[in-house]
Structures are given as structure tokens and as C-alpha cells.
Image (cartoon, rainbow, N blue to C red; front, side, top):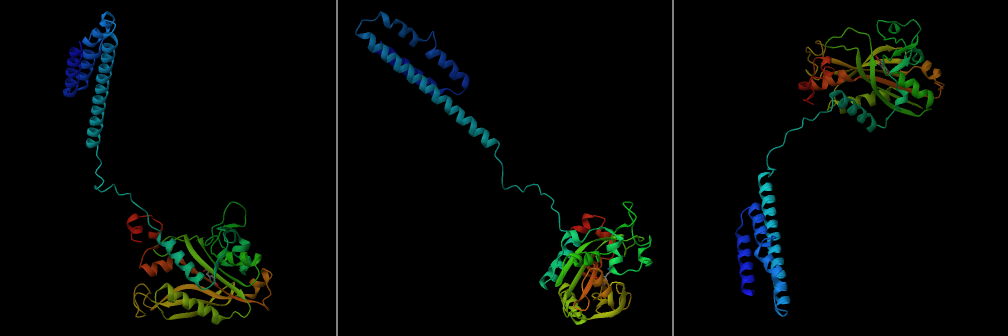
Length: 344
Ligand code: DAH
């Protein structure tokens, strides 16, 4: 009987070892451990054995049954592991393959130009005015009246300024100069602010004009501010912005809110003053308007012009960007053509 059990055990373990498929294992399980298996028949006949043999054979049959079960589990586990490994091998990801490129955006040239201008003035001690001092939807009062525009000034005409239907006096601001008076109204000198933003004008769109564009406004009000300070600050600005000191020309001009007023030209960066298409043969490019804050403006916001003086300036961002990057059509900034935008 013992020999018989040994034989069953050996034959089972060997067969299981050789099994190749899950089905074969299932069959072997039935063959060696099933109800009709030899082992089971032996277990059933244990009760007929002698009292001495009964526990010995019984125990042996149990042990062998356990060993076979164990062997089957092990084999199943092997199969499983093999299947997983095969799957992993098949689904292997080649991480050395180049991925799908995700197209990324670039900073808009107007944004980077504004940032650059703001940084230059911050370096000279100016700080950004608060947004609330620089609204794009504005009343005539701040866009014109407090800036000393007479009531019949032609710029107030429907031709130049967009009037809204919100209320009779509400316009899309035509200049960032509104931020000057709004700042002075709530902040007392010393004032040294810079204020970039969008402005709107009712103009025929062309390669040089768009009815939405950007300006950067600057304002200093303090004791003993003179025209020499204005010249120093703006010359320093052009030097840094254009990358080298360039001759500038302060041309006499007129703005209602400054006295005296000037328009500042920089030597043409394309032809270095020789005269070309960009500068219409003059050798000079106008880059901004500026002047000493008119005493009437100071009085309008409650600042004593006997005690304080100041200067202001306003520059067109598109114009500066066009000069710096040799862009010949202002509309390129607004068409969102990626072939253009990608270059920045
Ligand atoms: N606001 C003027 C314009 O849009 C530009 C300007 C000129 C701004 C002189 C100033 C200034 O602050 O002092 O044409």
C-alpha cells in the first residue's frame, strides 16, 4: 500500500511538472485528486485496514494529497507569472521613442515690449499704478476735462473718440493719460508711476494705424522737478530700450495737459540718420510725447503748482515694437497669425 502511494505521488508530481497548459493541469487535478482518483479510493478503503495500518496509511495519503495540491498551486503560479511576463514583454513601451510634440505658445511681442518698457522705468524708481487708476472705459471728465482739454477740443469729436451707449459721457479712453489724473487725485506727491494699457481711437485702419493700440504713460510729481529731469529720464530710456545711446531730439509741441510740451524723436535705427523709408527720409523717428505737467492739471487734482512740479510722458507701444523688431505693418500684432507670433 505504501509503495502504491509512493508511485501515485511520483507519477503525479512528474506529470504536473511536464504539464504545458492550464487544461492539462485541470485534467491532472481530476486524475490525481478527484473523487474517482486512485488516491481517493485508497483513502476510502483506509477504514478496512488493520488498526495499526489505518493511521499510518491515512496520514500518508493525506500528506501526498497535500503535496500534489501544493505542486498544482505552484505550477499554476508559474503559469501565471509566465503569462504576466509575456504580456509585459509584448506591451513593452519604448521610452526612447520621441514623444508627440505639444505645440507651445510664445509671449506676444506687445506683451514683451510692455514688460520691457515697464522694467526699464521700474529700474529708475517708477512703480506700476494700480489697475483701478487706469480704466479703459472712462468718462470724458478723466479722459479729457481734468487733462485740461477745452470743451470744444477736436479730439473729443466723434471722429477720434469712441463714445459708448452706457451714458452720454462715457468713452473708450483715447489715451492712457487718464491714469495720470486718477493717480494724482488719490495719491499726494511724491508720485512716480508708470501705467501701461489699451487705448482706442476711431481711425481708418492701415499699416500704420489701428483703432486699438497700447500706450505706456509715465508721471513724476515732486518738489523741484525740471525739464532737465525729463530729458535725463527719457534719454536713459531710449538708450536702454534700443540697446545703445542714440541721438534724441526734443521737438517743441503741444498737449493740453503739459506746458511746455515736446515730441521726442530718436535717430532712425534703420539708417542711423541717413534717411530711409522707415523715417520718410528725415533720419528721425518720433517715439513719444512728453512735457511738464500743466499747472491747471495740478490745480484740478488739488496739488499746489507753487509747491510741486512734474513731468509726464506717453509712448505708443506698437510704434516702439515696430521700430525695435523692424515690423512694417501694425495689423500683424492683431491678426494672430502664428507664423508671425512664433518669431518672438
Ligand atoms: N496722451 C498723448 C497722446 O496720446 C501722449 C502724451 C503726450 C502723453 C504728452 C503724455 C504727455 O503724458 O505728457 O497723444
